[in-house]
Length: 296
Image (cartoon, rainbow, N blue to C red; front, side, top):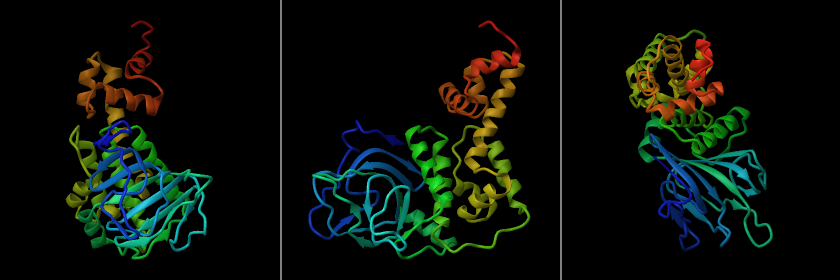
């Protein structure tokens, strides 16, 4: 589910009193502009709170901070005294700090994406990853790209975004863990993962569910899939749905609503957005072009 800036419940500032405030899961100082939940990860886009300076505080749960605008002061290992974008920081559970936006004039001009990790999800991650127990700066162009993709998903949320965001978050977690030696050959379970994506239809499928079927850790699945197929599982699923729909549009006159449902989309509007994003055409325009039909 995703929430917008006009929702009076979700637009909030973490106005917690005291110099040692404890911030709970997905709680931050700032004004929430949008927010979405994806399989144990909560994405939120926030503007820095202009009304008060941020004092020393503790975060009860782990999270990433991706700087979008402004100057940010962080105590994370490897971070400069004052950070500018792009900047990605990981804070483990129990982090106590005074990380904040630098005051400019009378306010705090800043914007950031937060990625909060639910406690249950964190326990699952630690079963397969040796995650850092200290706040760290993630200095990687690939990680910046993943975080930027999360920003885009949040801005254009759709049913497939849940899977896409889950895999983004899993891959980001791998950047703050010790790396395993990469396999040279595709493991047999990878074919099972691909078949599950082909067969899932319009059912909601998470990386965790696929990983359980393949008997591997979700982070290992996400990274191995990208290594051998050149894209994430979510991107592969989207391409598979578009290919199915394109074949139906080329070879018959099935109503667009039925094409969408048979191809695994939630509805016709979901299919239309996917086509416009991938092909810069609506499904109807694609059908006319593919069939050489200049009429309606």
